[in-house]
Length: 301
Image (tube, rainbow, N blue to C red):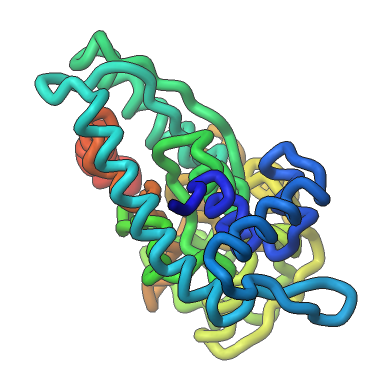
């Protein structure tokens, strides 16, 4: 009989990339995590790790085993649901995460609606970036996340997670009120090709979307200023220091002398809901997903 705790260590090695990182996430020593994997290998009589440079990598046998492990984890989610859940009404604790804007305009209203409709359900919200949200889901620390689709996310085919589209968040061109493009109902981004640009910092998940939208319009933006916060960018625009692409979900500081102009070509980012495989069938998660589907269309109106 396979020890599922050892199987979870192997899953963590695959998820985090190294035994050391997996051990850290599981609050184990590196030697203890290695020992768990070695014991699992002995139980199965196969090699699960092999040397690669100064580290190790998973063997083909380990990757084959993990395909079954992901299915086991999904079935365990359903088993826990059958054993513990009250199917008549969502109850208990629901833990969710999202990046700041998703919390402000999506998760906060969702939590308020759930509190009114399901008083036996307690919602706990945690701010987390996209990579951290996937880690928290994998570790069982949260039940539901809103994430931005990026090239670095696990693929939609990843059996560990259930990722579903929630909404498309369009980008608007933000310019000073006195700018020559401010009076247009819609603008081709090529019209702003020679402007100074204000863009998200390099590690922001939104930066590739901005650069891609400009690239699709036929130019590379001259990024003069970089910021993490959309309102910081808005203040820079208000001072005439450049133009910026800002998602429509971003609620900018009111009364700034700036104008949001819609763009041709529909530049946008996609937001997804994500649960562990099988987790979306929990009544609490299903109720939360239902609320998010109601809130999302009005958020980008």
